[in-house]
Length: 313
Image 1 (tube, rainbow, N blue to C red):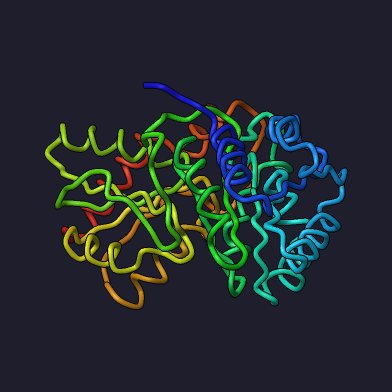
Image 2: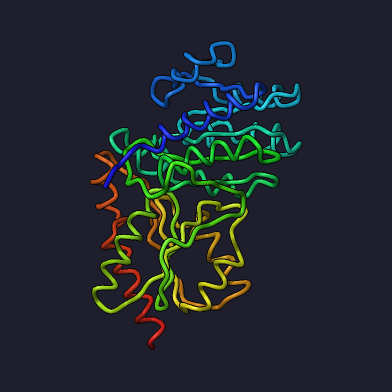
């Protein structure tokens, strides 16, 4: 299967958005080479600003650009732009519902060799609690391109989470993304597998393995974590009766938190997480760290069997 890094799709989307709208600008926190901002700067040199290692100032300046009528995109490692600049995002951007688009790069375990300090496993949790913020977590490079394009036209602030390492290409180049959207990638009646980001491919692989054992799985890519596609999730959860949620993020507050909160309100079914269980990451290749933490197709399939057993009792 073809693979490509989602960060490449992000820059593709930014360049397409800038080509359509002269108000689009990009701000970098001294990571233009790492994330791909140099490509943007080569094509739009007067619309690219490298502010240096100063994420807090970058987000504050982006708020000013939004107030001046621009459509500012900012990018840095997710652990820095979402974590270090959280107060500026909360008070300077979300409180006024400003249209700043935040690219959380190298998120989750994709920054494997950089270790725990650079592996953002809490970013979705701290973004989704903010009023007015939308949170998109695309599954592959093509969907990341679509997410960047969508962010340019979505009203208010948007956080787009994407990774560094290559992941399987699932979507066609002309795919689309909407706030509050989700895609049913596979239909089944025994268990619902919900994922976002890099774990979508693992869930598709797990569904194939489960089918060989007589278990049919629905797979949903919940790329919009806030707002969540609530009606779609509830319909599928009610039909399947068992749910597994997978994401390279802490169990608390991420996709698992969003789905569990929804099920607690509207559909009482058993749910199992395949997420990071209240710990930090560690150094290693992304593949190694995903395996150490059980974030694999095998881990998803095992969680599906556990939730089936829970339902049978």
